[in-house]
Structure formats: C-alpha cells, structure tokens
Image (cartoon, rainbow, N blue to C red):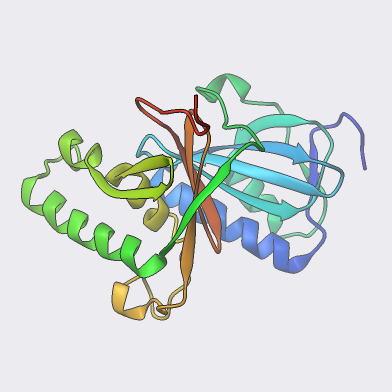
Length: 222
C-alpha cells in the first residue's frame, strides 16, 4: 500500500474487469462522469457515480487505495485499468462531487423482490417516457412516481421510477442477450431492498443504487 498517495491498485484481473464495466456504463450515461473512490478497510474500495436519475450507483471491488476518499475522472480510472499496474489518480476533483454519500452501514433489510419485476417496471416506464417525454428526457412526474412499495411491518418503503431506471441503466441485473429484458431474467434472480431512516438502497448482483428518501418514516417504532 502506498499510504496517502492518490494511487489505486486493482491487482485481480476479474476485479479490474468488474470495475471497468461499471465505469464504462457510468461514462455511457455521462461522458464527463466522475467517480468517487472510498476505501473500505484495507482490501476493498467502493466506487460511486451519479446516474442522471438523482440516484447514486456503487460497485465495491477488492483493491487498494492510497487515500481514504477521492473523486477523479471516471475516464482516467478506466484507461488505467487496462494495464494492471497501480493507477496514478493525479489531481483530485473533489469539488465536482455534489452531495453526501449514504452511510456504509445501518441499513435494514426490508424485503427481496424478483429482479424481473424491476425490469418490467423499467420497460413500462421507458414506453411511457417515449410517449410523454421531451428532448430533455422523461417527465419529472414519471421519474418521481412511486412504482413499487416494499413493506416489512411496521416499515413501508416507496421505490420511485428514478431508482428503477438507475438500476437498469447501470445494467446491474444479470441477463442473457445484449440488454436486460424481463423475459431474459431468471425468475429466481432477486434484488434486495434496504433502507435507513433517510436512504433507500437496492442491491442487485452487479451493484447497488441509492437515493435519499422523501418524507422518510422511522425504521423503528416510536
């Protein structure tokens, strides 16, 4: 480990491929995407990106990071992953990151939902966006609409279309074929819905999305 240097080292080829795929999807959504790298212990690094849907996406890989927390260009990291050598992250772009990250722990497991259900919702949403959207994208009323409510007594968590779109845009659900289609998702594949008092998180096989909850209710009885 190169302590307190802006260096990222992903030694495992499979983990380099995982992170490269994640960053490629982020850049597909925003060519100027930045990635916030945060160290988790001595052996893991979480990579956070924005999605354009007011939701964050994260993938955690086995890696070494010389600083605790740094924001840099996603394209810089992606380019460096091809060599297998430690990546010099250069100057930080911390000012480019707006807003806080969700906590690393404290999430309560609400319920598991068939992944196919989320993809079906995304397909319906995409059709509605095509019919009612504009050059600026889907209407805010569609994005803010609650499309799924997940409950575990006494807690009820609302999932807006924004989060569903973010999950499918990052291609976090495994599927056969070139893109996620409901009919290509195994019925046994699930996503896990978790929440704190102020954050919603959905964990899929290849990554997670998180968004602040509006009008959040306590997760514990008063």
